[in-house]
Image 1: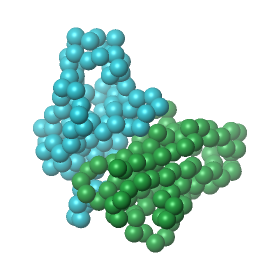
Image 2 (image 1 turned 90 degrees about the vertical axis):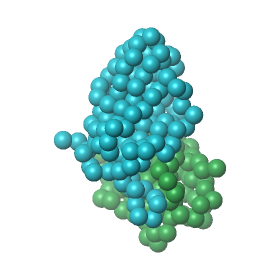
Image 3 (image 1 turned 180 degrees about the horizontal axis):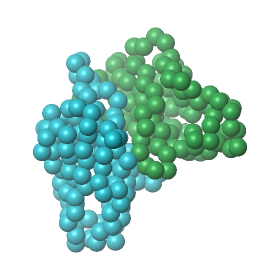
Length: 116
Length: 114
C-alpha cells in the first residue's frame, strides 16, 4: 500500500458539477497539502493543513474548498470550476520537525482533472 | 522572495552516462532544505535526495548526488550511470525552516537514450 493515495485518478466534470478529490496518508504525518500542477508552470501550493488546522491558503478561488476531517484524510471539494482549472492535483503529506521546519513531502499519484 | 530556478527544460543522456541537472535558489533565510523529486509519466512525485543548508558534505543516495555550492546558491543533481527508467521530469524544491512552505522549480525533462 502506497503512503499517500488519491482518488479518483482521473475526473472529467462539467462547469456546473460538484465533485470531490480525496487523499489519504498512511504515514502518520501531521501536515497535508494540496498542490496544482499545470503544464510548464511550477507546482502551485493551494492549501496546507498542519495538525488539522489550515495554515496556508494561497489566494485560491472559493470554487475550491478543502476539508481535513483528521490527520490522515484530506479532501478538495470542487464546485462550478472553469476550464482553466484543468490540471493535475497532487496531494502530499509531511512531518513537521521539532525545530519548526518540515521533512520531505510524500506525494500521491495525483488526480487528473479535466473541466469541460 | 524565495525562488527556485531550473534553466534546462529538457535534457538527453546516453544510457550508462552521468548527467547533471541544474538548480539555483534564492532565499535570505539562513536555514533551509533543498530537495529533488522525480516525476515519471504516471504522475507521482518521488523524493530522491535532501540537502540541509548547514550540511557540510554533499548528500548522496545511491546513484544520486547533490552538488551543493552554497556561495553560488546552486544545488545541482547528478545522476550517475543513467538507466532507461530515469527518464522523467525532475523538480528541485526548497523549504524554509519556518512553516510548511515548499518552493518548486519548473522542472527538467530528462530522456535517457539507449
